[in-house]
Image (cartoon, rainbow over all chains, first blue to last red; front, top):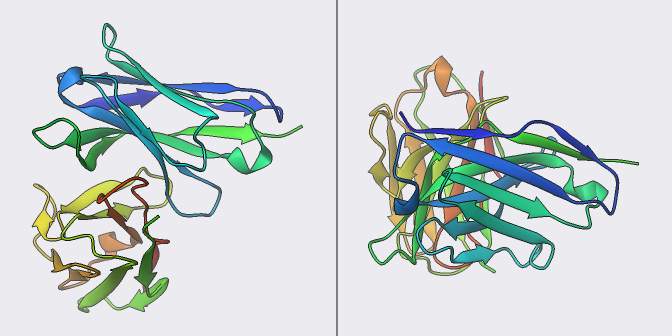
Length: 124
Length: 107
């Protein structure tokens, strides 16, 4: 069955970096992408970006572009999301999700399976 | 960026009620609209794609409609297990923003 298992809780100081992993199984990794979505405490969902598992092409929300890097390791079917120069408002649960693309492999469609979430707390 | 506005933000209804949640896009997005359900403490779950395609395994009481800028998620007969927050999300162009959510509770 399709599974996405994320790395554990992180506590970081302002200005530091965090790298969240998303280990996938149960499907062909390169036939899909990975999305990253975050949710601040008590708030709604915020789309951060997505990366195509086949060609590595990524798209980011402008809000985090320049601070975030999404990568994949096809040998281990794992995705990574690194966020730099952390601020207190980056405190959130970070989710990875399997991203479905259209037949061209460029146009994102939806996220059909989700990881369990990783809590990242930024505090001094 | 395309803004997605859901209404209402909070909804209280009785078991068996017909429930409707609306989502309005700030510009035409064709049918590039998904709906997700998030229960407390859980990750979101995909319910509907392309405005009206109900995902396999989702109960038939859930349906979606709309095109262009105005979309609707309907629960035909509310069940206790439907208590959750519902989000719409467009996938027309980056960023693929979500609505602010509609929290559904049992009256």
